[in-house]
Image 1 (cartoon, helix red, strand yellow):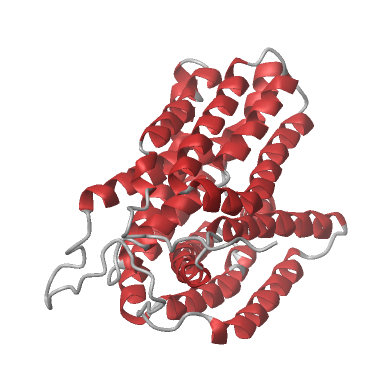
Image 2: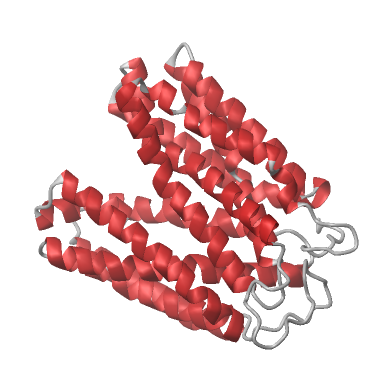
Length: 380
């Protein structure tokens, strides 16, 4: 709802492109703060309170940017909206880790698949309402009502407490001495490497969001509609592939998903960069989406299973670093492109995926000390 309405909001508030860029950084910074704040809350009280509170706040705060009348009110609106968005990103992934452990088979990628479906449905609704000349405030108010109703329907069934008692071991379930730091007992090297891989993967993903359409238009002098088709192909490929990754992960394991997925994505972006025609480049961006589809879910699951007592803070750190990569990627590509070419700038994504493929072992499930419960027979 927010992204699809940016042009309308920018026109209504009269802000310049430069100011809009600064406000988007404010949004990202507030989201990062929200991610870090909710980590300790999750570890103490479980992911349910933050999931419910952040989802309710996000549903209500989407109204704030829509009703903003100037730069000041829009800045305040985006700060609150970003904070709630960041808190929800971490808490719902922490909730998903717990549900996946109870299912005892991989389901995290499907959660992310439905997240992608929500993005597609939301943008479709906005496009339809704008075409029908429906007041944007009515559209967003409807989304607020739907969000609050959904929260009310599901909140009673969310995981409640910090305990995980399904009998499945996690990477470190040893008791932490009273007064110890939250990271006591956690393999900090592994946590740092997970954070770096999350940064690299979401850097590559952010590159597609901000540059795929422009790459096709500028490189091959195509109409802007073809650029939109390119981004649509990438998004659709990622969304569809996410619903199949869980079955693949149950068969070959999360390490292989990250390694081979990164290699597929690397091949796709390479084809896009060296393509002789727009058709080949679009195909490359599509393959790029397939490769990236299941990578971040494996990282988030591994982070959530690093510790029995500090799962929330581990997830918040890894998700936060990934989010920083999402913000940094497009900026780095733009910086390089201004000094050479967009094709050269996109090499950043190639390097990021090469690193992820090399470091895929960070999500490996050690034998006899499973971070993710051993998969049982898959349902027909």
